[in-house]
Amino acid sequence: MDSIIQNIQGIPLNHYLIFCSVIFAIGVIGVLIRRNVIIIMMSIELMLNSVNLLLAAFSAYRGDASGQVFVFFVMALAAAEVAVGLAIVIMVYRNTKSVDIESLSKLRW
Amino acid sequence: MGIFYFVAFLSVFFALMTIFTKNPVHSVLYLVITFFTFTVHYILLNAQFLAVVNFIVYMGAIMVLFLFVLMLLNLNKDTEPMKSTLVKVMGAIAGMCLLATFLGAFRVLEGQNEYVTGNTDVGLVKNLGKVLFDEFLLPFELSSILLLTAMIGAILLAKKETKQG
Image (cartoon, rainbow over all chains, first blue to last red; front, side, top):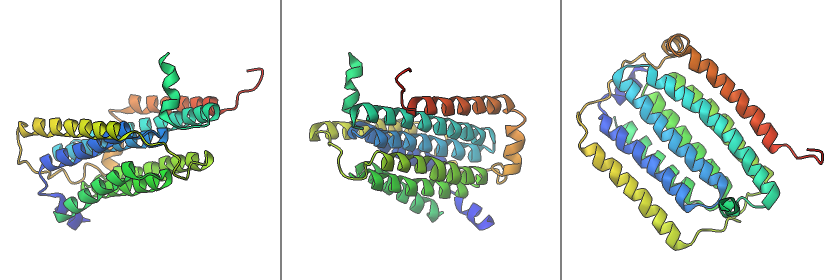
């Protein structure tokens, strides 16, 4: 285990920032270019995960456990969000026979 | 030290595959691989508790839920109508602008060359449990109420409506 821990020493914090913002931007692009509601939710998961990793990195960097506890709460929130979101997707599919995000555009009116 | 860059490259690659693959089931599988690389990142940060939770909750529970819904709705084929090329290009440009904004902001950040050394035992289950059940006891209990609410809400939403309502 110690050899693995040694591996992480020497990574600048900036590289974690850059890596997590790249993943976050990929999630944003996924939300913008896809029409399948389920894939949009998966992109949101990607964004949540990138923020989780950054919180864990800062927590390890500062030697403060609060950041990792916060990641734990974010994971609980993500589980709740996925459960409710997928239930809504199933309900929409039952009414419109489609998971296209455009089928929800009626909600504008 | 090289492990981080290799795993980071894999994460970015599979995340890109997730959003650009047409078949939704392949997309879910790529997302599972992405989350696995995130688990490796947690292990590298010595956040062992988070690595295990990420492995069980994300790769186990959430991804299986996604896969179940995809199979249930019989969406495992390329039926998705794609957005027009213009909208796609605009979306990609908007995401790149966000990324450029982030990178520009990080340039002026102080302490650019500080290294992640880390207190090596801060992420162990023992230490995390002490913090979680001492300082964060109230939010922990509240999150259980949140999960209960989500469970009831999901069942109510997905239940078939009867005539009587």
